[in-house]
Image 1 (tube, rainbow, N blue to C red):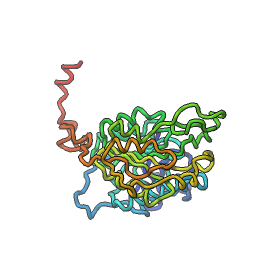
Image 2 (cartoon, helix red, strand yellow):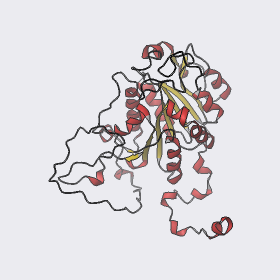
Image 3 (spheres, rainbow, N blue to C red):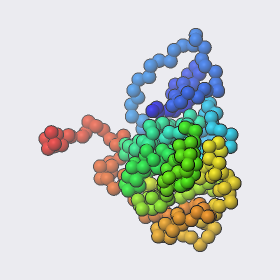
Amino acid sequence: MSINRLLTPALIGKGHMPTIFSSDNHQPTVEQPVATAPAVPVATPNPPVVIDPNPEKHAYISKASLKSPYFPTWCPGCGNFGVWTALKNALTELQLPEENLVIVYGVGCSGNMADFNRVYGFHALHGRAIANAVAMKAANHNLKIIVVAGDGDTYGEGLNHFISAMRGNHDITLLVHDNQVYGLTTGQTAPTTDKGTKTKSTPFGAPEVPINPIGLALTSDATFIARGFSGNIRHLTDLIKRAVQHPGFSLVDMFQPCFTFNKVNTYHYFKERVYYLEETEFQPNHKVVAWEKTFEHDKLPIGVFYEDSYSVPFHQTLTQLEAGPLARQSIAEVNMDAAISNYL
């Protein structure tokens, strides 16, 4: 796993090419520094960063600031391109300060986005993206934390963390690339693959019923639950913006066609079936009605299924954080004598 901040500003000096941290072996599109270039000095630990309360001095996220020297390695026609565009649109339109956003990435094709966004990021191990995001939010609840992961990563290996984060109403946004197949490993059955689907790992048809992500989120008391489609970028952009602004756990499950390895759930398949909840009389404030919607298959509803307008995120329930984020509190002022005498 790796922490990446592409083109780290603090390491850019006159006569030096930017230092690049990457979680994969993608080749940068910029030239490497010549051998005679002066060596970059070894970084020393920095003092705690104090965010300037003057908003005029913040560097806000923009299309230009998001641009990475790496170009996506996804297949032509991949639904990840639509998700990537919608995410960049949302971050730009929300005008978030660069220093207040962290994106945690899972594994698979969607996780490779870690190299394609120039933001503070963390490329996690298989199934552990949500757990890392929860820890980051606990350390500094002033941060906006977004998780970008796939259906196999989230609803398979990471299912326990998915449920726990919803139960705790941790203030993170989870964007799930749901292509109903393991794409990076070239086409095996995933947790959301329809029963009977033939794949490399199930040549006679998938024997298991698929996970119902929206239904599972409803029964786990997630406070914002939505579903989008990468084929409608404007609609998906708006869903992501609402999810990021929600105080508490927010899920956006995204239909995202795998052009290469899923010949069933294609763009044509979804365009024939999706309809928009906001264009009906449906209201996203009733769990039972939302639950019934999750079982519609001939037509597939997208939009906001449920939103708790009175949501109280996890960190606001802890008296220990009333003095401010843990990252800003002085360790020197913490007295551990009582805990040590009681438990050791």
